[in-house]
Structure formats: C-alpha cells, structure tokens
Image (cartoon, rainbow, N blue to C red):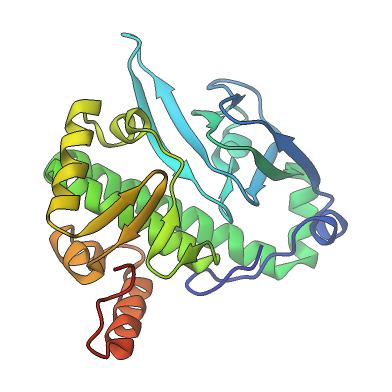
Length: 250
C-alpha cells in the first residue's frame, strides 16, 4: 500500500514489513468482531486493504461507532499502551492486517524511522479526527455531518489511491453511518437523498461520487480540518483542470 501526501512516512507492506519489524499478516472475513473492549492487547495493527470500525456498546445496548478504519491506517496503539482495548473493533469487509507486537515494535522503531514517523502522525491524526467527530455530534446538522464524513472518506481514500476521479467505493450501510453520526437510519436515508437532490453527491449502489467538492467542503467546514492541506490541494487541482466541463465525479 503506497502512502501519499498528506500521509508522511511511506511504510513497507507484506513481506517487507514483516522483515523490518517482525509483523505478521492476518486475514479476516467480513462482518466479524476482531477485538473486544477490555481485551488484553499486545499488538498494533496496520490495515492494508479493508474497512473496519471501532465502537463501544453502552449499558442500554446502543452502539456508538467511534471511527472507521480505512486502508492504510494504523490502529490499536492506545490498546497496546493501556494493555486493554478501549473499544471493540469489527470488520466491514474482508481485511488484511499486519500485526506488530509491541516489544518488536519498540525495537523496530530504532531501525525504521519511517515507521516511527508514521506512528506519530497516526496518533496525532486520530486525535484530530476525534475532535472533528465531537464537533459533528455537538454542532453540525445532519446534512453537515454526512457531508463531512463523505469528504473525510474521499480524501483519505484518494491519498492511498483508492478513488477513481471523484468516485470511491463505500461499503457502509445506513445503520453504520447512523451509529457513527448519531442519527437514525431514517434520518441518514433522508439526508443522503437531500445531498443527491442538491447535486452535491451521487450514489449508485456502493459507489459514491463527489459532484461538488468545494461546496461540500465549505458547508461542513472541512477545509479547516486536520486534512486541510489535502483538501486545498484537491480543490486547486480540480479548479486547475476545469476547462468548462463539470467538476470531478460529474
């Protein structure tokens, strides 16, 4: 998996990663719990090609999704440091991970500065993402929350080479989206329909197309988020390539 700007520290994958820090490859099927909150945890994980989500079940049985784990992301660092998983993790799709035991990781950092850089960036990025998600829940409307989520997914996937023009594959159900944004499935459905009718996004099956990147970024304040540099770079690229035809994804 190639890591492109704005994600510093290109990481090796597969056999190269296994040689550098003693990582082991794990293959998971879809729709399965991988970690449970409170479980003893010795490894951090690098997600190569699948979608997962971190979540917590509340005492009343409701589920809050903390975030989605996309290809190229590192997760589990907190669980290693606290020795227990703070959140449960489940797969959405079939997934290939590299598991790095903490003691091997500690030794490997001395030999692999790229890994150290990526881990530090990952921790900072995770904190910034959670801050944006808090703003989602506290201040953004459903329309703005969903716009922000779609842009967050698009910008990340674009950086790791998993978009085609303005389109990307999104294997999320409306229930998963609702549990991540604090919305009912009915509200998610209504909001997605509004975004389509306003010609900001297109959705066909599991393929999402960003039809008006700049409008979505402005209405959800995404330009000022932790991925701000990437957002501005994409906007400038779209504007530079605009020769009178519709913007990317149209």
